[in-house]
Image (tube, rainbow, N blue to C red; front, side, top):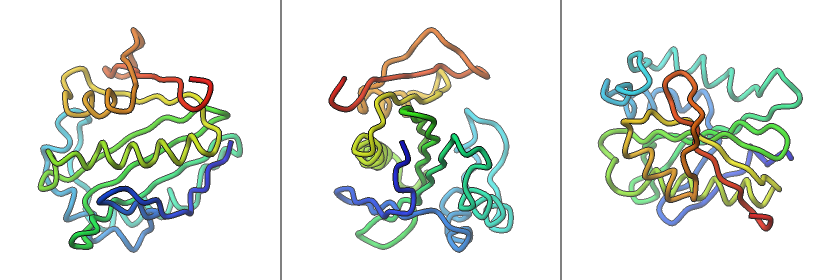
Length: 170
């Protein structure tokens, strides 16, 4: 399963555009709130660090059995970047992640972006999706539930593994 990671995806209010180094400046501003790191640790990256990371992500996984997909969320109403979604694909499974900048939270954008990504992955043949979510991160848990994921007993680095079967076989 190799979903097209170069495609722009379209939600109701968002365009998911492949994440590129040229997005670094705007993304650094969108993701500047230290509160975004409450559950993951660390501090916000500046534009230079993001530019380096985005170049590495755009180059793709060094493992030929793994595909990385990373999309910036562009709010169509004003053209601003508001966050990102990610998918790491191995075989017919994908691990998802999502982040929406603080000014845009509470509007359902993370759920919309994740649903848009999930539809793209399902169309490419993905049948299992997972996400790792801190037990106290209720907003991310709500997004996972909206996608049909349920928590499992598995823990990794203090996060709960959420999982769902998707597509026609689900």
